[in-house]
Image (cartoon, one colour):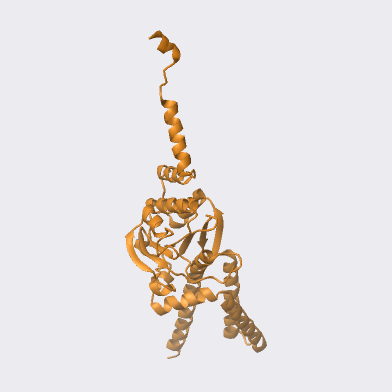
Length: 304
């Protein structure tokens, strides 16, 4: 009887340690920022120390001090990570454990055509100073309830021409965001939650890009400023701006993991770098045609 009792106690301790290690591994796998990783390590060290002191040592004063320190650190982390904790509760409440485990579904994968067309559309919108906001879902499994307004369903193949039409100034959907999953445009005219950081520095589109990427770590936003035509990319609550079309192509290639051949990238970059207006292109073509015309010389006329 005594042997079975001690065996059950040891089994409970073993399961406790295994579950704690599994939770710690899951947390470490989800955290990518070095500073956040250091905070998490320090917090888990305090929790482990408190458990060890309460379990194996009879130190009441030390236990109280460590418990108070763990409580203070828990409140501090709750304030610092309020967005992440809210996202965790949303995932647990909706049952999206695949997203929580960091296992993106296959339909979220993008190919080189998606990256090239998205970059080309952003470059042309930037040249024309037409505001745009494109949300690319990389595995967060964004749903209509994640937005302030889910927009109008599109469910069409992604293309440069379609993006240009959606963000045309005379269309009713140009003020909202376009949601892209994989190689398809899911919806347009989406209203995103705004971020509270940088309210005095950024406009509405940039705040919306920061807000959605703060709540969902596996999505990015491509932003085109309507006032200046500046290109920006928001990822995990950070905004990189201004960037060029070639820089945007490299960032999308790295983030989406889509292999882009040299031919496709050269074609897209050559299209994006065409910043001349239509009139100048026509003038250059006319001048080239005038130069190529064979004008007879006066000597030939006299000889004939």
